[in-house]
Length: 237
Ligand code: SF4
Ligand code: SF4
Image (cartoon, rainbow, N blue to C red; front, side, top):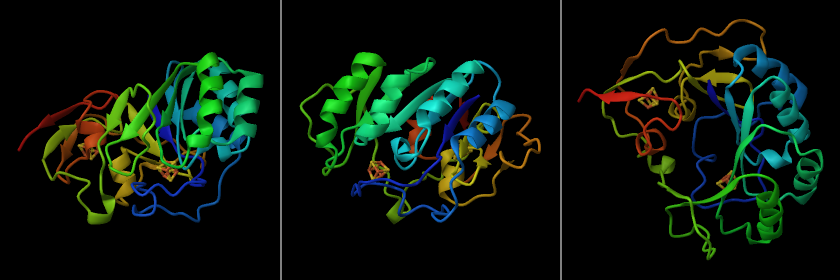
């Protein structure tokens, strides 16, 4: 499984291109502590899975480093998507130095120039890539950028392309919100579709058994880099 999890929606920044203010998420959902997330994830994801911890900024979520260590103990690798601003959490992560890190993704945001020292420290300890959203107000660091992320204006509801596809999302890929609701993909969460289930209930979560027809369209985060989330699609029309 490849899981994108959002244990917090909190963030210090207000990037002008951030989708969080515009998508249909429950911003008031109570957060769950790291050990509840760890217990739930190891029940639903087999060894060899990858968990990308995003948000919000996951460095603001208490116990991030302990959560990563717990995943590694269960043979699950992890990645973090962060603005890298919160130094105390960087200190704790580097001190514990849990194994199993696949990647630290840092975005070149206009508001995180003060993160450069943290970025250098993380880069010395873990694989780190810098990304930038394709938006005129994104950061302007003079560094090599690994990937340019297409800007999606959820405010204008242009995030989906209305193309009809076969898709197998949900079988090997889930997106999980702060509340623990597991969706087949980020678009399903962002547009307020019914989740597959909730990871904190202790109940099994039914997955699609085979690919299905998705007729609501998709966003560029899945279509621009096919396969990057273990999601396979075939355009029908
Ligand atoms: S750092 Fe990320 S979560 Fe925070 S405001 Fe910017 S885009 Fe949104
Ligand atoms: S085509 Fe895109 S929006 Fe539809 S289920 Fe697949 S990943 Fe989600």
